[in-house]
Image 1 (cartoon, one colour):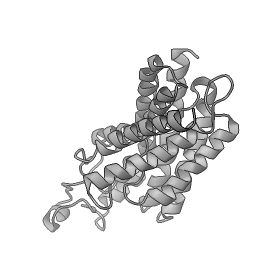
Image 2: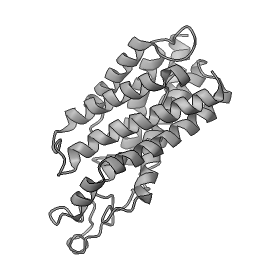
Image 3: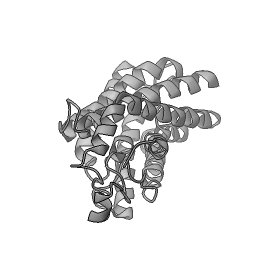
Image 4: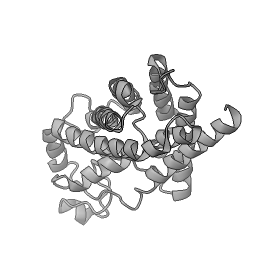
Amino acid sequence: MSSSDIFIGETIGTAVLILLGGGVVAGVVLKRSKAFDAGWVAIAFGWGFAVLTGAYISAPLSGAQLNPAVTLGLAIEGGTKWSDVPVYFLGQMLGAVIGAALVWVAYLGHFHAHLTDREIVGGPGAQDTAAADRGTVTGPGPVLGVFSTGPEIRNAAQNLATEIIATTVLVLAILTQGLNGDGKGLGVIGVLITAFVVVSIGLSLGGPTGYAINPARDLGPRIVHALLPLPNKGGSDWGYAWIPVVGPLIGGAIAGGIYEIAFA
C-alpha cells in the first residue's frame, strides 16, 4: 500500500473512531443529552463500536491500525515496515484532532449548557469554593473526560502500569489474530474480535484510568480541548498527559516482544 493510502486511511479511520468514542462519552456526561447518565457500560460498548466502525472504514486503505501503540507492535512483529511508521503516526494524530473537533461541533450547544449551568459551573476540577463561585476551574475541567482520559486515583506509577497492561492485552490480541494474506491488516472477523477486546478492556481494566490504550486517541483530543473556546472548561491536565502516551507505547512494544518470543 502507498504512503498516501496509509495516511488517508488512518486519518479517516481515526477521525471516525474519536468522533464516535468521544461522542458516546459526551452523550453520557453532558446533562442535557438524551443519553445522560447512561453509565460506564454504555461508554465501554460505545468505544468498542467506535473501533469497529473506524476500522471497517479504513481497512481497505491502511489496514486500520488507528493507534500508534498498535503500529509500534506491528513494526516490532514485522507486519509493518519501519519506514511506514511515521506516516501511520501522522495520520492517526491528524484523525484524532479532526474527530475531537467534530465531537465539539456535534455537541456544541450541550457543552455550553453544561458548562454554564450554575449547578455544575466550576466542576469537579475546582480547587476551592470561591473558584467555583467565580465560575473558574483551576484543575482538570468538567468536560475534559469527553476528550481525554484521567485517573480516579492519581498515582503515576500505578496509572502508567494500568495503561501498559491494558495496551499489552490489546496489541497482543491483535497480533495473535494474524493478518490478511495481502498484509493489509486484520480481516473482517479480526476487526470484530478486536472491537470486543476493546469492550472487554474497558469493562475490566478501564476503571482506574479510563483506558486510553492509544496515544493519538488521548493526545490529539487533549490538544483540541486546550484550544476550544468553551467557557469554564478548566485545564487540560497536561501534568498527566504523558502517561496515556508513554504507557500505551510501552505496552505496544511489550506485546510485539512477547509475540516475537512466544508466537513467531
